[in-house]
Length: 117
Image 1 (cartoon, rainbow, N blue to C red):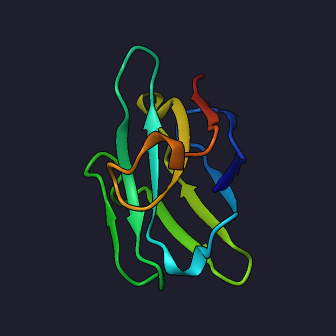
Image 2: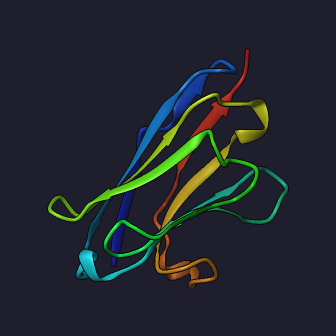
């Protein structure tokens, strides 16, 4: 399993970022995928999960209405569009193969998102 996140950076409050996660080493289109984030000094926080076909989607209350998860199974890529970003969204964002609670070995290396004025 290889998951490589990209698209993180520093943005002002109210701004937007689009994260990508390139997947390889497994049959991406068969797997539910998840975004997880972890802020300094805090435990991992579930953000969103999307079913293998892209139709079943759930979000944490903290991001609902601001973040949009999607996937392109032809490109083996998972996305997270993040709008109306807040300082409390600052964290290391990971994509994970499987549902929330999947083993840490099924996570990528993460991409840093910093929201600050």
